[in-house]
Amino acid sequence: MRQSTVILAATAVFFVVTCVTAADKGAVDDPMLERFERRVNGEDGHRQIINAITNNDIKDLSLNRERLVTHDKLFSLKLETTGVTNQKSSGRCWIFAGANVLTPKIKQKLDQSDFELSHSYLAFWDKLEKANFFLERVIEMRDRPLDDRSLTLEFDYLFGDGGWWHYFTDLIDKYGLVPVSAMPETKQSSATGSFNGLAKHLLRRVASDIRERHRQGKNLEELRVIKANALEDIYRLLVYNYGQPPKEFTFRYEKDVDSTEQIIAKTYTPRSFFEECLAEDWPEYVTIVNNPSMDFDQLYELEASRNIYERPDFRVLNLPVEELKEYTLLSLMDSQAVWFSCDVGRENYGDSGVMAVGIYDFNGTFDMDFNLNKADRIRFKDISPNHAMVINGVDTSAAGAPVKWRVENSWGTKRGDNGIWYMYDDWFTEYVLTVVIDKRLLSDEDRQKLKQKPDKIADWEPFFLALRNLD
Image 1 (cartoon, rainbow, N blue to C red):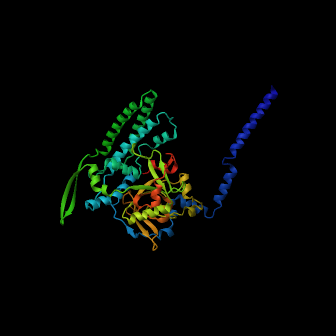
Image 2: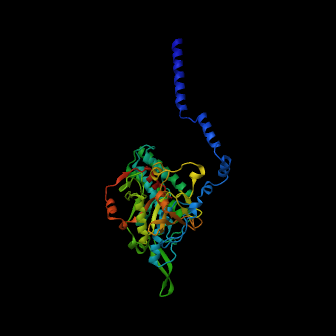
Image 3: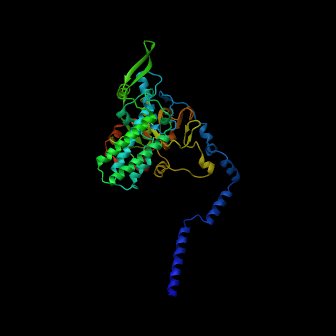
């Protein structure tokens, strides 16, 4: 007995020592810490570096003046602009950018120098459609466990403000457009945090109810009754926060008729307003992405990438970034502004509205290598298409190559250069991820690529996951 006890005890000690030793190999240990301390304490100007960085803004310290002094505000081609708008405390950049593309066309049609579309009108219907989409997805996946990857995404990203170009055009196709006078902004449409929180809480409660009723044996029709009742509450909540969307409205504006200013008053529906002001000049748009972590010249279809349930999923053509630039330039030469998405937070000197690679020299400030190629930045979730804006101008070299691009943002006039940004061409290369282009401007070869069978992309793929969160 005693011998076996000793053997067992020795074995236990062996396993404990082995486990601790294996764990220690991956731990931060004392010799490692001593090496760290020797390195940092041995640097020249150690105290001065600490004093500078701990008492100043890192971006201010790292601002690359050599890059900044080469900046100018000139453009060789500049389209008519709408006047800088402000999405305020909301994630509706995609709606504002879309409206900034369309508004010059409407101004020209109505012969108006001052006109603004209602952003809250489209946001209202987007919210209702997203609520319906979420609950339908919950019904679709009613048998899946709660930790299912796709179902988890629905709960993580339900009812956000974000969206994409095809969200915008699908909403217009279904609900039309109205001027801002027909449905102006409200406190809640401009600052959506509290309203979104309430709506998400309500939708999660309904999702729980749907899953429980399914577990009790309720059929699909009965579950959709629960959904319809919930959407009635969401609609009411939207009306209380955004106002009632108009079915009909009278639009009044001044117009020069025979050298005399006259007031024009005409009654529209949202659909008739769109048809009169835009339908004739409504191109067939295609979305082109630059994602070097995936195959170029390939058409992709993104799972569950829509806000309106009955619409088809989103398709994109992946092309090299130089082709995105080529088509953007062609669009501007065709008098068409370009809706685009990017990772707006990178190398962006907001005080002057300069977006340029190297505008901040973090490598020099910290003597560290922060470089990562675009493909790996996408693969490892370092960048994503998180903001939409409009390109409406370009500055080119003597040889016709783009040097910088004029960008109209929707953050008001207090940021950037009175709301305008100067996107240098190297920044376009590194951080622009999507452009929306009139299909007729594409080459015959690229139009053919749109006809290929698309590769299906899962809804959790890193690059396209941002579809659910663009703000």
